[in-house]
Every structure is written in structure tokens, then in C-alpha cells.
Image (cartoon, rainbow, N blue to C red; front, top):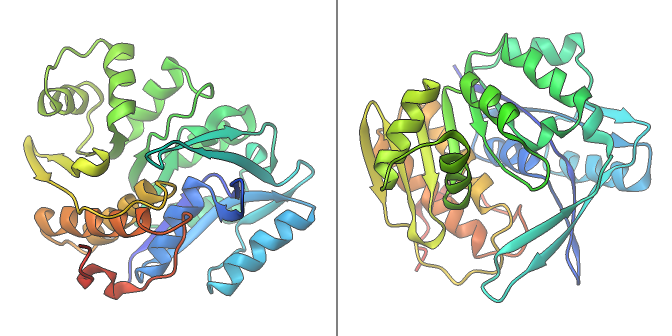
Length: 292
């Protein structure tokens, strides 16, 4: 039986100086899952505008279902992306936008209840309307996967603690874990110590820590799995972490060994980093590509 994942969150246009690309971390995760053969559903909202219509067309052209994407009186989201000299991205995220007002509907509730896993992130919860929807869905979800996705200034300790407490699986990056360490008074001096403290504090079963060009590590059942990553010429880092998470989830749901899960996730994340934009074309054979 095929696995089903329902994600909730941002759908938007990443606006670069020379182009714009369809994106949003939550949409990126959902679309990568779809590309990898998982039955993927996505809850979000667009505005009643041309940009929203173009996003629906983009997903439809990928044969991705759009029935859970609501229409709002707020505008479709845009994000200004700036790249530094190492192609690391920073974001100016406009507010308010359509995905700030995601409504809790019967169809949305049904999609989460019937999914094998539910993927959520902190940015989606910056506005009260979408926050209430996410928290309600967490009460009925099976496996709860939290992409912490800290985007200043749209987070605070109380909310992050609430969302961490709900998580079965957490994905966090090397900058975010520094903030979490300080916010929650963790005392570990190594990644392994920090992940073990984080897992114990919030009763999280699995934690994935992405380390940029240094790869990633995963804590599961008290054991740390490490991967050095794949070296590529970086086009930009937009969407690389989302591709990593989607691949991790797809392989986890198919019960691959953790070493294989981590290798595949690093491989696809590196491929996306080597391509411009968050959603380059690929298929399931990406796992076997040589990323030299």
C-alpha cells in the first residue's frame, strides 16, 4: 500500500534579482514527496490574483493535486531572496499573505487524519488563524514531522516549545540548533549531546540535524548516524533542506535502513543545492546519480 503524507504551510514566489521561482518550504517538501512516489497532499492558501493562479498552474503541470489549496482575500505570498558570496540565502517574507489565513475545514481535517504522516513548520504559525489550524491538526495526526524552519522575526520560545512537544520527528539546521540551545537552556557541547538533550526534553523519537556542506546527522533511539554529505558546486541553497527532509520522510515511511535514508537525503539535498531554485526537475533515479 502506498504511503500518504499531508503537509501544511507556505506556497509562494521566491523573487530573485533576475527571476522568480515557485517555492515555500512546505510546498517544496510536498512536491519533492510527490516526485519520489509518495501520495502527497498539501494544505495552503493563495490570493485571488494572477500570482496565485500561476502557482496553481505550476503545481498542476507537475501533476500535483491542488484541491486543499484554499483561496483567500489576502494576497499570494512573495519572498525576496538575497544570496551571499557563498550562495547562502536570506529571505524577506512579506506579511500578511494568503497562507497566514489557512482555515480548518472538513477536507483538511480528513486529509491529515488519513495520512501516514503530517509535516508542519513554525513559520506557518506566525499568524493566529493558521496557527490554530496547525495546532488542531496536530491533535489528529499520526506521525508528526516538525521542520522547525525558524525565520526571524516570526517565532518565539513559547510557540516553538509547544510545536516541539508535539513532534515525533524533528528536522533542524546548524543555525537553528544554536537558538534552541540558548532558548531552552541546553548544556551539550557537541551535536550528539545537544540532540540527546533535545530528544529527552521534548520526547522526540528522531532528530535530523542538517549541517550544510558538512552533511547531516540523525539521532534515533539514542544512536547517532552521521553522513559527510556530497560535495557539489552550489547554485543556491534555496530548497535544499526541504528536498533533504522530503527524501528522509519518503525513505523512512518505506522502512529503509537509517544509513540508506540519510545517504539518500544528503544526495537529493546536494542535487537541489547544485541547481538554481527550490524545485529543479528530477525523478526517483536521482538517488543513483553521481554527484561529484
